[in-house]
Amino acid sequence: MTAVHPASELIPVARANGITHALAAPLGGGGFRGGGGSVITGQASAIHLAGWTVEEMLIRRSVAMVVEWPTLQTRSFDFSTFSIRDRPFTEVKQEYDKRIFELAELFERARHYAQAMEKGSSQNFDRDLKLEALVPVVQGKLPVLVVAEQKRAIRDAVDFCEKQKLKMILGGGSESYKVKELLAAKHVPVILGPTQALPEDEDAPYDQSYATPGQLQAAGIKIAFATFDDSSFSRRLPYQAANAVAYGLPYEEGLKAVTLYPAQILGLADELGTIQAGKIADLIVTDGDPLAIPTQVRYLFINGQLTSTDNKHLRLYEQYRKRPKP
Image (cartoon, rainbow, N blue to C red; front, side, top):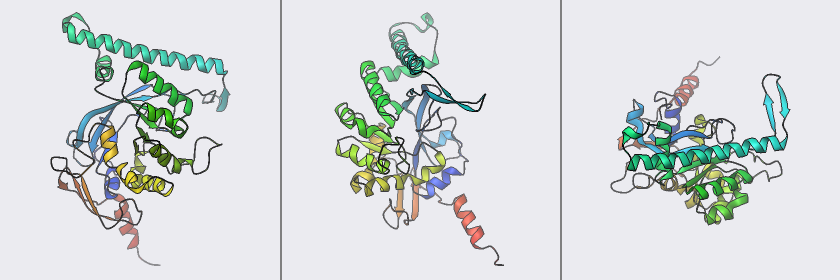
């Protein structure tokens, strides 16, 4: 949450296309399709896209703990030599297993810390803010948003969370269609990365990214859409759903995947996701289908307040539209 810049020009651009609130998630690898960095990257916050300060924008400080699942990559780029470096699989696998073991050990330490907090005096143990942040996770009060792309990583993550008794949300999941039966059986919801992307697997059909949402929905998996690869693309969120609708996802499910389902997945359904008495009034009024590109947002309300849709893109459009003709 502290990394959010309330004065960013990206926020009004997203608002202008009907985005009223968002999930601010720390991703160490540079997005859903990134890699490397810390395994636990921090807590994801729900924020409104209006407010002078982060505190004014805040809906809920913590809705999930973000875990970037380690990857098995035998090839990497060596910046010291500016060349591709190949590593033996046994070495990479050993490093992978070590990171998973350290992650399990961290959660176990968090359980012991939770017991000390509940039963012991604060004077009898040293306060550890990292372990303290993990206490709601190991107690099942806060889900883990596990960012994983490949089939093997997703399987390992589901198995890990089941053994650790953690509430799992899968993030990214470009190969989630390959393990949809497992995800459905374990009731793991999926926050998909951008559909407007080529598949990661070179052997996959060219339109796999478009078809995956419909395939997961048909398997009984609750899905939502995200644009975590780059916050500047958050304005494209309606079109991520629209692409999936064109490739098999029922329209109503596509609409729910950018409204109700994200709220349900992140435990915010009592406040957001539908128009009901008692909920936060985040509303848009459009002149057409909210998932269609030609549609314009006429009015936008955030937290019950009529909010301007003025933005940098519109200002530049007007500026250059009025430029003198040669």
